[in-house]
Length: 457
Image (cartoon, rainbow, N blue to C red; front, side, top):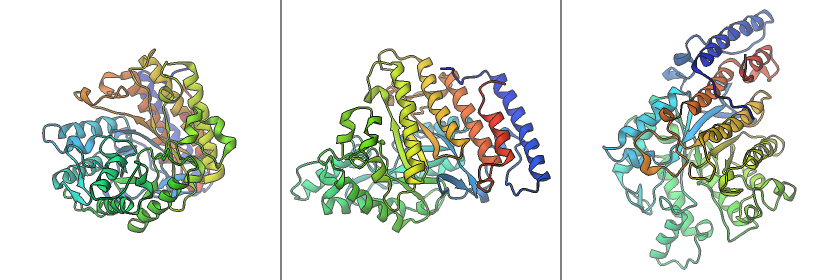
């Protein structure tokens, strides 16, 4: 497979030609009297991603696309989960700024991070409904700093895993309160534990940012709320327990905050409601973890779908060509489902490869990223549900102690940086030029396809 990396001169030439193409398609649209909305692209840094204050509005959803100000908003983004923890310490707070600055310079527009740390070191929630104000101020800083760099945030509200507390911590709190609990999955079913989680949601959504004086639920910097990172309920392969929890919590979030989008945080595994789709799962175990991609995302109040991709964890640890073929089929299946059955956008909200994998090299990583980006672009040019992707994960220099093997440091990875920048460029051009009122058939769209979706000039 051909890599999408490119030298700087090529990128510069693409930007010049793209700007000229925008002018040409605008002239054609005006001749035909069509009502197309666009912003002239005259300066790469100022108009492609920077917005004036009055344009910083909530991200919404129209059919299977995200929209901002009535225009499509396809995303190229990243994960950096530890931002709140680093912001809580003066000695590491600058790393938060570095992450946003680097990502913004490459045109990335969305970051997914944790809005939880339960009962652990430097915890946000020290015990049910008891918070560390200094850590909450750290989260305030993350939100305010993201806004400075025009990066929107997906804030995850809890963890399936024990890191940063997770559902296991909620169960421990329940046991400390005298509840008779036998499994970490009691998090999903016990009324007291549900009330703990719902109280946390209410506290975060109603938080008034000490830096901006904006309530979280009113802040356009927040792209969406994520119910939980990678929820699973292994004790119930039927999926009924988790489905019931999703229904209650999606309603709860929307009741408090009807303005922001809501997603679940699922990995994307198919379950018993769609036996014909089980073939796309990476292994047979995936259908036994209590999740059910299509059924879960049909819950009222869930606005878009999430999918994760880790061929090196799910298929085999040894780097192989089969990983790329899995990623392609995994993405195609979920984009198709989002269009046919869900009528919503789908974000591939975690993907990456570990440098610790046998056979790993940076060329393979670039190939993987290019594969994901190509699938998103193929959907974009059809006005499809493939709404974007989020790398796992972006780090600044000097944070090696946090690296799980998946860290990407852009300053040390020029080829990867070029691929990311090109994807951002293409999506930003599309977002800026085409309006949802084009119905995806206007001459602008046809011209954009010539400019945006070819690897060579």
